[in-house]
Length: 261
Image (cartoon, rainbow, N blue to C red; front, side, top):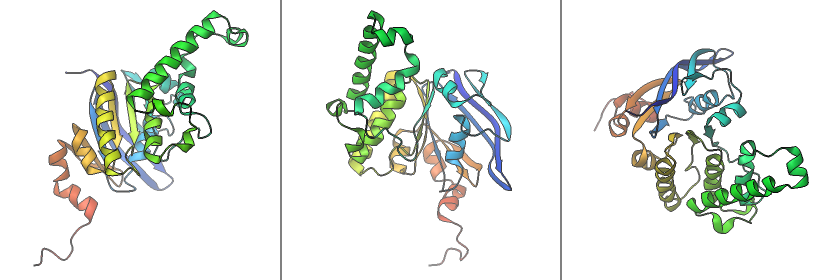
């Protein structure tokens, strides 16, 4: 069995009188692809914000490769190999597509300030290596032909893919995708499904994704966790989960009138 990389135990968070997430548990293993689904307002993005250091949980604990990361700031989590994308695209729109990926490599650069100022040999060597890797990533996402274009000029679906490419440039061991197919047409969604599978297998990373497009979820996820009002109401095999009566009720609402013909 693959090693456990991300382990959340009894995670809860309260905002004033509101319990946004209650006793959330997650075990994510190497190379696993898991979906986190639920109705709007269920607490899915709040879970992502906790796992990536944006919020601190009110209670519970979570580890990354066996290390407790409850109080760890986001930039340190990124260095350790935990990356994410956002529900609302957060690209540097006036920078080129290539530069959006290059900027994610900043903390990986080894040369110092003086080397950068005076452009010593190590500077050019590292910059060349990083640029080559960035172009390789863009090629995987079929974005290399747009390398010099301002990111904000890309079509919406391509901007989504660029955000994932930028996250991949940090060399993650775990990638959290927050609604990666939002705003995409069916063709773009189909391409995205193939790309997510490709990067999981090519880079041997674990992926946790939030998504409302059930075709995408059922097409790539090996396991599903369902949240409703901050509580896990089902988890397990995707096809069994989506047919669970509790899950159907959470999405569609209870039928108070009964089953009338």
